[in-house]
Image (tube, rainbow, N blue to C red; front, side):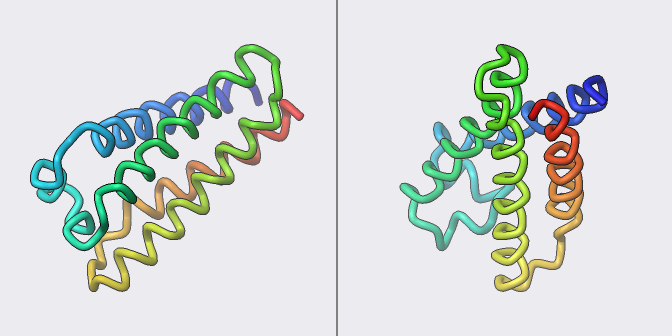
Length: 120
């Protein structure tokens, strides 16, 4: 179970570290080609989402790695499920039906949350 956790957690963490980092550092104009929703979202909110994604990625890796507050891995994975449910809702409200990535991320985060219970 621990090997499976690390596979899922590492992949999710890599994805969210990248996605969060670019939301933090890139301008609206550089984000719009890959994230159309930023055109109607205030940049402080986009930056905040980026910070949440980076912190969540760290929460998937550091607690189980150090053995300190391992329950945070479960909380981070559950947070990513909620984040992607919200993202899916935003996409659907905007008429964007390309939500396959969101669904894959929801499933991966849910599996990671389930696997994280082995650390509890």
